[in-house]
Structure formats: structure tokens, C-alpha cells
Image (cartoon, rainbow, N blue to C red; front, side, top):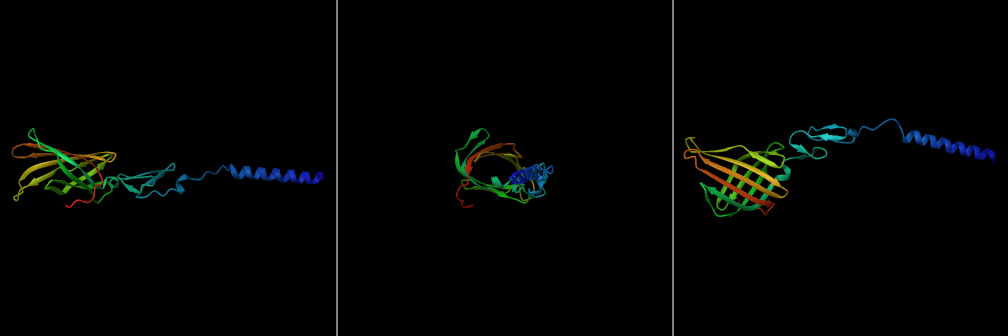
Length: 185
């Protein structure tokens, strides 16, 4: 009986020591081996470091994608200190080549500004290149600067148009909410 107890205690002791060696091994698994950083992201200390234009736990999302869509709201313009009525409006943000590049289309009443607004997403803003309007001979007529700021599902679009000849200015502000049904553009 004493021999069985000795064998039993020895076996339990052996398994306890073996379990502690296996459970507390000095080898640590590299946390980057299971993480698949996409779009040329690099894994450092178990976290993907995303290149410019990408975000997400594995750099799987373009920074522009969260802003792509249609927004419904209103626009108010001020031309040489004269306020115009508030009008219903739609703004559409469209994807362009590049993870942080977007285009913008604006519809205010019967006016559609389309196709020439090219911007770059920077955090919760989009900064657009200055749009230059020219006549048929190529003479510069006006400059339009656009800037977009997001706050949750709200969007604020600021446009300023300067007539190059007269230096008269028109400033417009659109305020709207994300995703409205497709308007007829």
C-alpha cells in the first residue's frame, strides 16, 4: 500500500512539474505573427502601424471611406454682405484614386457644382484644391475654395468664391446630415 502511495505521489509530482514547465515556458509568441497588416502596414509590438490614408486594426480601411456618400441639408450664401435665402441642398462625397482622395458634388436648387472639386481627407476634415473657373480663352474668372468638416454624422461645407476681375466675394455654408436617398443629379 505504501508503494502505491509513493508511486501515486511521484506521478502527481511529475505531472505538476511538467505542467508548470509547459505552462510557464520562457518562449513568448510574437504577437505580430497572427496580425495581418494590410496595405503595406507594419506590425510593431502587436499593433499595425498604417501608412498614410489607411486605418483600422489591420490597416484594412481607407480614411476616405467613412465620408463617402450623400448628405442632405441646407445652404446659406452671403454675397458682398447680402444674405441669400436658405435653400435645400445635397452634397455628395465620392471616392477617387488614393485612400485619402475624394471628389465633391454640390447641388443647391438648380445649381450643380460637379466634377472639379478634388480633396484630401485629413482627420475629420477634407481640404480641397482651389477650383479655378476660366472662360473659353482660358482667362481666369473666379477662384473657388472649399473646406469640409465632419462632426459625427454632421457635415459642414464652406465655399468661398472670389471674382478675379471685381474681387467680389461669395461665401456659402452647407450644413447637413449623412446619407439621404439618391437625388437626381
